[in-house]
Length: 141
Image (cartoon, rainbow, N blue to C red; front, side, top):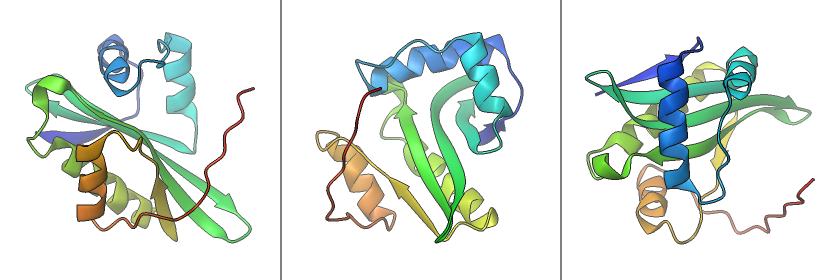
C-alpha cells in the first residue's frame, strides 16, 4: 500500500472519492468533476489517497493556510474503505499528512473527529494528537 498525492483529475479518482466519502458521513454530498478540479487547483488543499493494486482504499485532505499567528495545517475528510479497515491505512495516511505539513512549514496541525468514531479517535491519540478542550462552532451558510 502506498500513499499518493493526487495532482491531476482522473475519473478513477472521482469515482473512488464518491465511493469513499459516504462511508465517512451520511451527509457527504457527491463530488462533481468541477469540485475535484477546483480542489486539485487550490494551492491550499492537498488530496492524498491510499492505493493498493490500482485500488483506492482511503483518502484525506491536508489544508495548509497562513494566519497572523503563523502557518497552520488541518486534516479533513479522513476515510478508509470499510472493507480495508484495521490494516494501518488510516495511520499511514495521517503520518503522510503530518510529514507533508511539516515540510510546508506548518506550526501545528489540527483535525476533528466525530466522538462516535472510536477507532479513529483512538488512532489520533496514539499518533500523538492531543484532544483539545474547546468549543467547536459551525454555521451553515
